[in-house]
Length: 223
Image (cartoon, rainbow, N blue to C red; front, side, top):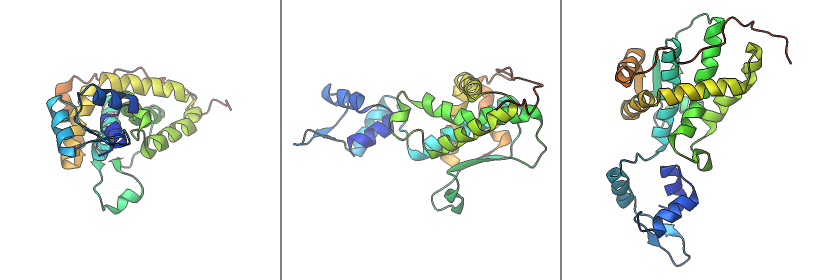
């Protein structure tokens, strides 16, 4: 395991990882070229002993989808299932995970809420670890969600900055519920709406933590 791998697992910068090595905190081997190498088993034991959850690809996707699901719950948007797709699933050509909704007519307020749930994946990626943007924690799924926010925000008469602010507030206030759902999603791969509600019930998810901009026209005429 190389330094870049440790940066991804910890969600921290190269300087932080090297500082842990120099201080003797993190088990490592120093090679003649002065680079660091790590034994996977020793690192796993070190992280477990300190209560640090490795940011594996599957867990990162689980956090991403859990953020969508919990913010849907907060805003009263019902869904059918939330999934992390397994290796070999043909749907991985399009996405690594997904929240499935039943066909329905969306109200004006539902559209605002969906934009916030889209932005929540980016807010959750940043929340996971400091310097998450430095090494693969904000991946294409987050960026495509954010691109949709930027594209659609103006059609609802608001800005992407406001949407992100709302999403960040929701993620921060509901983080224990997001982690609880992500852990179970990482374990089983698929959860239905009632299961998500049950997992979040012990985490004091505020029923309405955010005040939406209500009753704005869909098209304000602004460019």
